[in-house]
Image: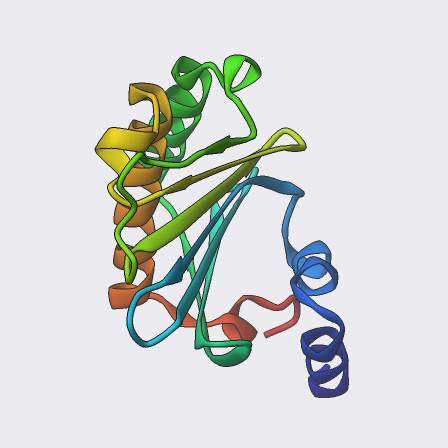
Length: 154
């Protein structure tokens, strides 16, 4: 089992996720800031959430948590209300923050990007999705466990 986890970790999140979860529902990537932060949240259809934290292209930490049903329902409701089919691929503010953050949300195969200041760049539905997913990311980061705890047979 340990060899499977190490191999899957090297090959990427999707292989690990398939071993113990349904397919991904939504992904949020947050990059930027002065330190070159990279944060990734993937929420799977069954409510498993995985957060990867790093700087540059170096992964420092992976944390997982099983979301409560009401959280999963709120995420689904917010995603459906956002209107992803009507979004442009990218929203850039007229006056971007140079050390600000860039956000990428992937939902149902459609990826949309926005940058700080988010309120100026993104339509309200996309802003609501990003804010909610950032809250989920922070809650998993604060209360999650090692993703290896979620592998089958453990």
